[in-house]
Image (cartoon, rainbow, N blue to C red; front, side, top):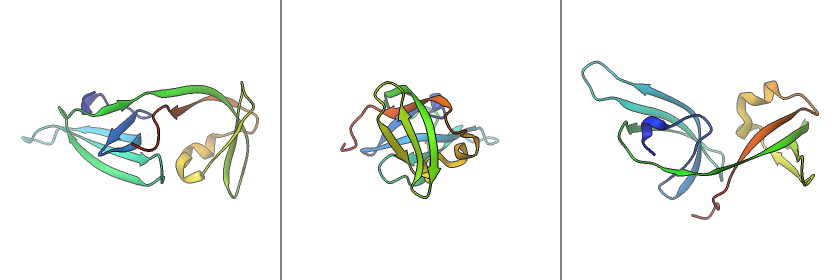
Length: 121
């Protein structure tokens, strides 16, 4: 996919690492070429990076697996979710969720995305 097509929640592979787009902005400064400024979160270590791409740069898109999860509770280890089909529980650290933690209500269900690609690339 082209950098112009980036959207929040997309999964991409850059330099062999998996990232999820948490923010992007398409900029066209004056008489310079347009570019895309993206904030990306590393899937493995949850570090947030800023990258600039030319509008025409090609990125490798990673498929996301979306499934319904129920938010159970939050504690010092992070937010605990339960898969609605298998009842498996998953803890996601607060750094990964960011501002979404402010809007989570216990026992509420929502659709969550998970990367289908393996973490070892």
